[in-house]
Length: 88
Image 1 (cartoon, rainbow, N blue to C red):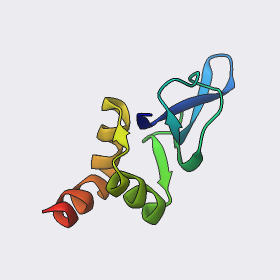
Image 2: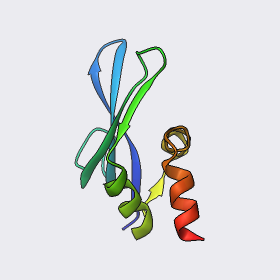
Image 3: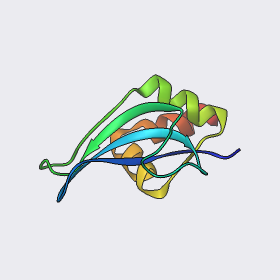
Image 4: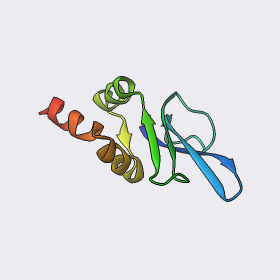
């Protein structure tokens, strides 16, 4: 079972809002997930994101793979660098 940290779309037509979730890669994009670790709102200027840092770092340490988009958001939030420093 490969676990991914990815975006699950919510919101209404033309106004997306995303939850950052930990899910098995076999689950549907907006379907079942293991845990919610944050949110991302691209409609705000600048785009807003919130993470539960401890949960996110915990899942990364367990081996969860972040998708490319989530990895970029984690880098902007500074969480990715904390994960790299902790792993080294």
